[in-house]
Image (cartoon, rainbow, N blue to C red):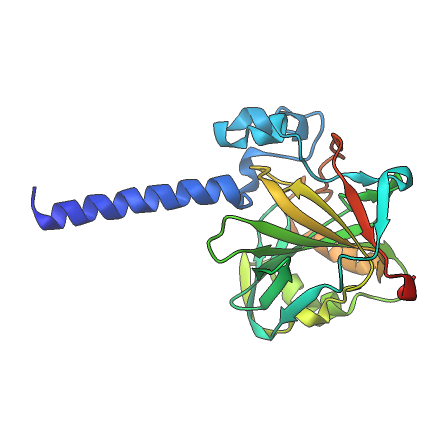
Length: 270
């Protein structure tokens, strides 16, 4: 066997292993094999039966989203201010079919317990996936971060209610969102993640999973403790752009299974 053949085989093996790892850890971009219709064969209750590497959707004990019941939440004041270091970056909007995602080339990082998680993307769910004391909100945004090796994920969730005031970030990209009606992706140039407003002092923290297949666990979840506002028109725009059947793309609430939920609430800022 010559050197060229060996090199080619090594490259193919590396590519296969890389794609397999991404399938295990990252969100699925192709929505054709799953749906949010609870009565469908490929609905949320059956995600774990569709592919072997989606088994955590069925067997996992740390699944997301969850409800935050008042009687289960532990109020603490020692988690600290969120250590965000975001920066302007080239960004691209993508229509993944089941949701709309904005991906940054290099949007900075979030630091949790001394570990850096690179900011990768933000996407939106309507209605919200997480609930607070049983209350579901009109929209939820997810800022997704990963360690440099891609093995650990941290997500910041932001809850929105329909109100008089639009969301500033969505206002900035409305024309680009409308362009996705005719294309699957659109480069939008420099975009600053800090335009997405987050309360850095008051937030929920728990260990969970991705909310879409493959439902990878050990995801560090941080949910903003203060609800933001969005207009009905902005929510409708996100729903109009996604593929038919994914206008409502929230996974049902999962069992808590004894997990700890903390609410960081510094007393000076309560």
